[in-house]
Length: 169
Image (spheres, rainbow, N blue to C red):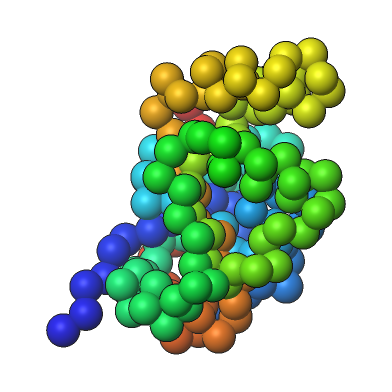
């Protein structure tokens, strides 16, 4: 029997059938369908999106057969367990349009959120050296994001559960 974990997608829409067509290219992990296994993070993201688009915040819940997906993806899966040199190179490369994400169908790791993005921007613009960027990042507890860029894997291993309209504070 397979284990399914609950994951969340922050949005301003109810998304019963996720797809990879709407992803933007120069995000942390490239285009794809983004999820998190941290509910509070999804709630915060949905509120931010709702403020931007003037719509109500929605958190879509899914069940993910993660072990099976990772087994099928094999070498085309990449997991960053912490903020480190490899994570920094990957995020910066994708933001610069180097398309490092193209080697992978599944990517998971820390979010370059508000706490982190300032450090990345300082590093990318040359205001702080690499070692200082890593030093600043290593003490932060990463939030988590999952990007699935293969529609085949989404269709096979991600199952819609529910959508919740979030009350704004």
